[in-house]
Image (cartoon, rainbow over all chains, first blue to last red; front, side):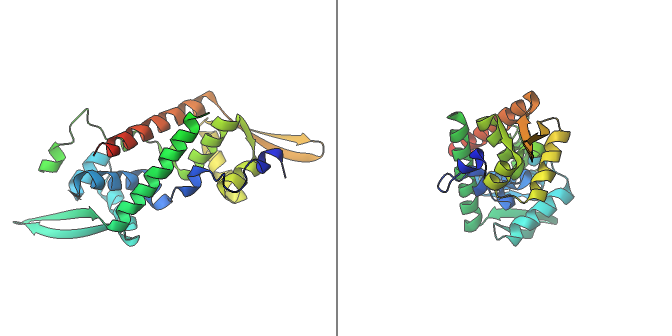
Length: 112
Length: 112
């Protein structure tokens, strides 16, 4: 159609096309990043580190849990209820794909 | 509160906290990335390169325009209407901040 359109042929797929909103969304990317660093994290730690409200964090954890990317367990430690979150194998792989796409994006833009 | 919470002190702010949803959102990051590569792009090129619908792209362009990150001009080339999009100085700076935060995130996670 236009000259510009023709420059975007197959094999020249833009790296942002490989970003998946489930993982790319800011809070969810933060959750998966933290879980990759700490193996497991509790609800309060994720909330405080990412500056989220309880409701916000709950919503994003549900999206990740529904996608099979995290596992959530509620336990009592003494009398205190505690919510632990761990990444699943699928979550770890999804984060790795996201980071690879981001790396390609950065390399592409650095090269211009 | 918890041991984990205490490890996240001031000065150890997580890089995802520096991501701004206006720029970080997948399609909008793609738009600004393309504009940094091509100086200006027309509507059809952005739509096709990013695999968006017309409505989707319009919505994301409005968010960027409202934030002062892009300028949109509709021109006629012969009889054909064409919508050109360019990044503003603010848009270029916002993309640079986003890329710097992403770079920090990647470095942080590569280091673990």
